[in-house]
Amino acid sequence: MNANGPNGPRVAYIMSRFPRLTETFILYEILALERRGLRVEIYPLLRERRTRVHPDGASTFAKAIDLMSDEEGELVMHAEARELLPRVHYGGLLGWAILRDVGSALVRRPIAFLATLATVVRCNLGSPNHLLGGLAIFPRAVHIGAEMRRAGITHVHAHFANHPTTAAFVIRALSGIDYSFTGHGADLQVDQHMLREKIGSAAFARAISADGRQFMERLAPEGAAARVVVVPCGIDTASFEGPRQARGPGSPLRLLCVATMYEVKGHRYLFEAMSLLTERGIDAVCWLAGDGPDRAALEADVARRGMDDRIRFLGRQTRDQVIKLMHEADLLVVPSVPTASGRREGLPVVIMEAMAARLPVVASAISGIPEIVHDQRTGLAVPPRDGAAIADAVRRLATDEAMRASMVENAARLVRETYDLDVVSARLVELFAAGRAPGTT
Image (cartoon, rainbow, N blue to C red; front, top):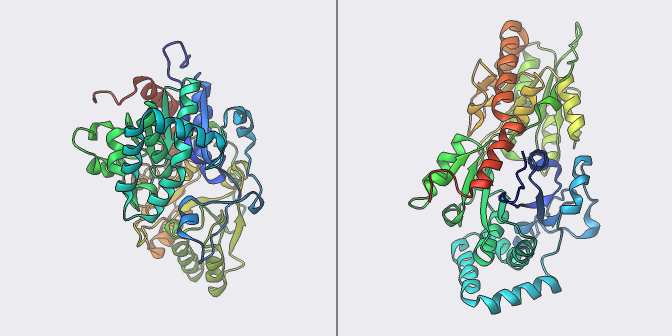
């Protein structure tokens, strides 16, 4: 299929950073679109570097846009991203080219410029993160929009409903280029400032689960709810297939958790489950892949429980390393929880990856997770914040071979049919070409 034919869309993607180790699903989505003939230009708002945990004294402004200087970390680069580098348009938040395009926009369309700036301010009052971040990226968004017009871009897609979609909103208002966006989890649940306006002006708003769609539909202005569509994130299922390493006689049960170390990931309840498994005489180890701001506190928790020999912190892992871990583990645990701030998961991509690797899954029944973890059919669903339920599910999977075999086959079939990148990219190309979700105005 040649999606970039004479009448096809010319699409640009906007995200906070690119490439980003914790957001490889964006990279692989773009690569899948390119395999369908769609040439994608990429406009990160900031250049990606290794994650830095902001000290308690960091300013609200720095936290809002997560600024990092050149010396604060090395560039993270995925091998697959290198082929896209010629079409990645990096840039700062200010500079002569940006000031030139801002001045030009202000002179050519002063009313639209000031009205758009006023909307960003008015709709984000009460949210320091969204307000300061929106003001910080406003000049760059004006510049990006001008660059896109010069490049003949016909559609912009933003990943995450916060700052990237604010940029897309500004681009549409001042450059006339239609946009869409993907809302994931915390970007929807924690702070809804300006979300109504973003849904209302978007060609379509993409939710990655039915749960996310329902959330956005409730916030959509009149007549715009039909523009909210479900297109899940996808994975290259074939990449996760391969021979599994069987557990030898007398070897411990191998649990795997792949997650950034934030409160929403629920690591503490997995630790509670590990303690209970030990008390019940079940020999198990747990591998933690990932890093994050809570790592030191989690390591202290493991030490307090006296489980240093049972729970291993592996740190950041590449995609290939995660695949290897999935082939060696006996089950994946996703103990996600809602937080007091309202942060919730959307639909963790790691669940799809584990299912494609035929790794049994135990996961919390919250947000979009029950849409893929069908209890006792494609995985075992447990209540959030319930270490005992996790321990019970782990024990059940370890002892019921017939159920385990049935679940992994059902899960692999579901992922191939619904969450494979070929399926997802075909739907996205259709939506980009249509401009607006079918049946909407």
